[in-house]
Length: 279
Image 1 (tube, rainbow, N blue to C red):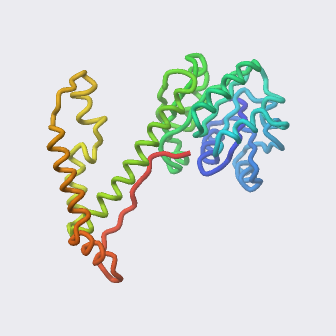
Image 2: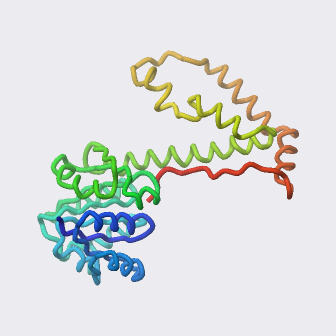
Image 3: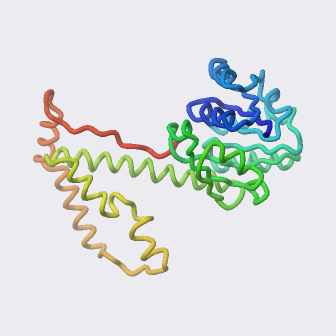
């Protein structure tokens, strides 16, 4: 059993901390929300008056905060972690912040004689509750090995991202793809509705092609990742197909179809596009 300071008890942090308690870890928790702190105290955590108070006996310090400025303040502020942190403790930042901020924080911590790694998470708050988060570990081999038992209380899959600062970098790429693909999916779903055919048809078709499965796991392994850059589909044909799709989407028929679908009382299929992981 380890003594852990957990700082940041928001939508992701609170269930993550709760899972650590369930695994028998001794938690000292701090958040600006006293209600969030008290909820964790009822689950068995110890309340801390400040980040410094939470960290003073900790073997591990976990931060799960909304932005890099808050992480910096929690670490280096007047009542910050570093005012009481043991030199043999390991700080694990699980926040989603700018990679250059992560680099600067790790560098400054090292200069002060402390150890820090980045482990942002993938998946959603539901996975945080279930303890099935994807853990993206950025740290030295020794740090990753040391942190793994603690991290696996909060997730069911750990990826060693390849060194300090690499966890947040792969998280950034993941979120970039997820957000942009989600927006594109919404556009495609809207076009389905405007053209008057069942979304179930589109779902069946796209679930069996790279459009729905994604090129990283379908066309790329057999081509790009093997060094084969020969075209599987000609760019002039792609340009033609994209042009047709855009022309249809901007046509009067499509606009009228969407207008009819949005009229009060119109029968509509509804769905909620999902967004992988955010913290």
